[in-house]
Length: 298
Image 1 (cartoon, rainbow, N blue to C red):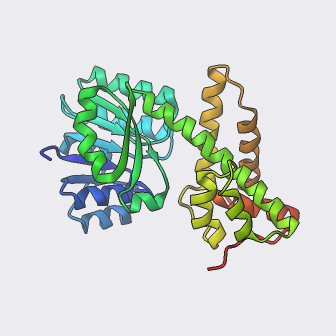
Image 2 (image 1 turned 90 degrees about the vertical axis):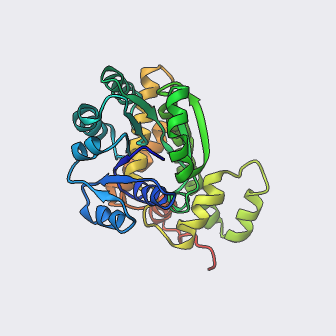
């Protein structure tokens, strides 16, 4: 643990992962636009920094966990790469476009820096518990360097291949996860209209090939328990699905179901629900159809 680790982006996922790193003995220098998040990390013995450049100057490895491609380009390309000393390494955990990942990796290489893309799988609750999954792209040497850090934040680490494969794997993963959120919502809205018992319906679905992780894990711990606060917000799901459709279009891969799911997300955002958890797409559908929202007995 000789490396000093910078951590930029202390949002819903990043803050929990950074806290877990401090608990495992890593020395962290942190920054976020939300000062309250930095204050919380300082309570866990991390050192707060005024900006991303200060983080880079004080670190050997810089981890970024940021909302979108434009912010990653600005932070990594504009502040981290120019200020991280030669031999340093950047690990980006954001869900961004493959083109942005490739550009940041090239900029890092030109500056004598390593680069790893390691987007996050699973839910915010898993990040809280140190049980995240990571899809990692990078050289064998760079992967070996960051692996202890990933192990401090998660339980499942997949080295997907060279730089860029982590980001591309995450887009495939999120394509299924987001589309399933809409599909599950439609199925449960139909069950509600039929007047079926929710618990019995879920028991049947989980015993057939219709079952899926979103239905079994996310919906049952979020919206079906009445919790629509964002673990993964509809706004972010819309952003990710837009990235996925753009990447697929560039590769001439038609994603008809993905396009339909994005329009469903667009409708939910137009209804002012962009800040709610993406499991709550079922509530949007039920409100549209005048159906009672499905809820499990607590």
